[in-house]
Image (tube, rainbow, N blue to C red):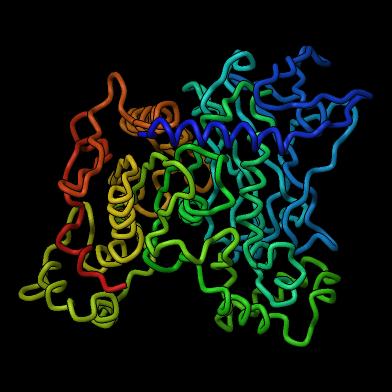
Length: 534
């Protein structure tokens, strides 16, 4: 794990960091300084018997759950509206009295997803809020902290989805934090004017800067909720997983977390950061004749409308290599850890189902992905003779290919890079078919409700889950929370999950169709992934 020297350096850095981010909040006529090594402000009995928590911005009171307490809609940064649009996040404004943390903050401003307006209709620019779930009697403890970063292609989503409700995970003995962060044009517009006005000489990664601000909030405040700021795990799926990957090697993330989980986020392409020059060119094309000042004066709906039209012209708002949040010197594998080391749990689903080529398009896609290795790839896929049968787990050749060239081989490559860098790595493949969606296989995002223990018959992840599903979910929650607690997913009563090495490339298969719901295997797609041409 850590060398002794690295561990001492990292702990010292974290202590200094938390002293630097602590400040005296104005609340109810008194101020309290929170810093590492000082006694945490105790909980106070509030109105209606609810505990009150002293944060750096003021007192908050939460809502009881069946297993603990949830604190919703806590601001971790100032509202990014008006002149704060397209600027780095600022400290949240303090408040007096006791803040009622019973309601979630609004999702971050976004266009409808494939015509669906359930989230976009309630989304707002004023959205930099987070939520904290604690188990019973956590205030006097120092529990591991798990910070969730939601997916949505950096364009959609929210940290307040019922699928991400943290009560079930918290009941396993951890603190769970979910966050919103700026999306699309609001979170990832790069432009020369913005770069010039920035104190750090970069633009375009405001959404990632929001995530860093949330992690700094955790460092300064989570002890008051019973969390251990020296034991923080970040985890995310899809764009949230890609965010985790970016944060791992960000020089701005030093001291903010110890461990990371990437779920279907290590894409070979699609979610990768683009060069700053390309991001700024797209920003100029989006702005047209308008200045940044003029665009800041636009209503949020007008900005979204312009961004939607720009997307139709091929303009993409996504993370950029700005040499501030994302270092230009980071290796292509994205696993340059600035200080010390981390433990990493990483994986993908067996049939992600995104961008599956059809008909004759498969041949062209194979040529693009494998280049001079295409003949070997065709043989590996069984395309050199009679049509291959459909794999019961991985699907058709086209479905296999789509998953291979996106998250599966990306996860394999990242695991290998991490192992070469000396990081402790655990890799998985989620293979379970959701009831009622068997035709889709283990598709993109299907593992998320199992990770959170939210197997519901309503919502976007609704299904007729049964006892097999609940047993698998409990297993996965055990692995994920064990990893957060100790940097190793293994524990009593769980099938052994071997650590990934580049010698054997061990990984864990997760599905209720296997004895014990999990089984180790080696060399995931070892005949395919090495053939992909970057």
